[in-house]
Image (tube, rainbow, N blue to C red; front, side, top):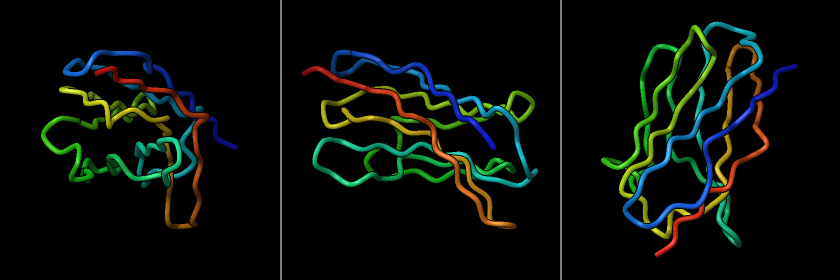
Length: 117
């Protein structure tokens, strides 16, 4: 079993910045993808950004040029630097660890990000 522990959420004014962190208790397989998803009230959970163990990244169009995902493989940790935050970024942000061979998915408990306008 793997636990994902997120931190760094909170309340920030529009235009401000936050940095989220997610630490995995262990990595089962070397090749994996770590990512951040978010879910706003009344909306479906959506991908924000993801990064593979090799460093390839993928971003939602709505956060490109504002958010940066990175990871420290030695610490089993993924980060999400969020700049120029907007009120529409308000959501619960979830960390996700996944692999394909064999397939598996783990989720963190979520951390609230609230952007006031």
